[in-house]
Length: 91
Image: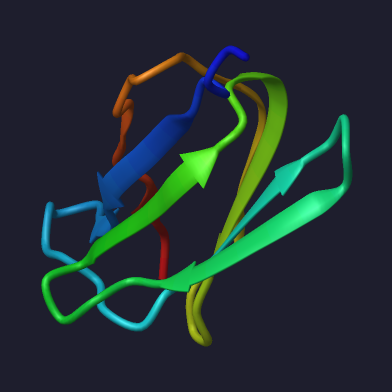
């Protein structure tokens, strides 16, 4: 029996000036399976999703009251990769 391969995503949410933004609601959807993951950015703007299936077809949305929602489509998650995702939100 082979072990299931997994991917992880870690990132920091910042504004246009590079300042971190805490409290951002991050939703990641595997559009192939419709499995949804949710996180909220920490006081240091960081977030993570662990133990997700690698592959194409992930959609991310970043939302916080007072900021425009950012949507990122067609994200590919590699095996054992920790792709940095540093979205920038506009006020």
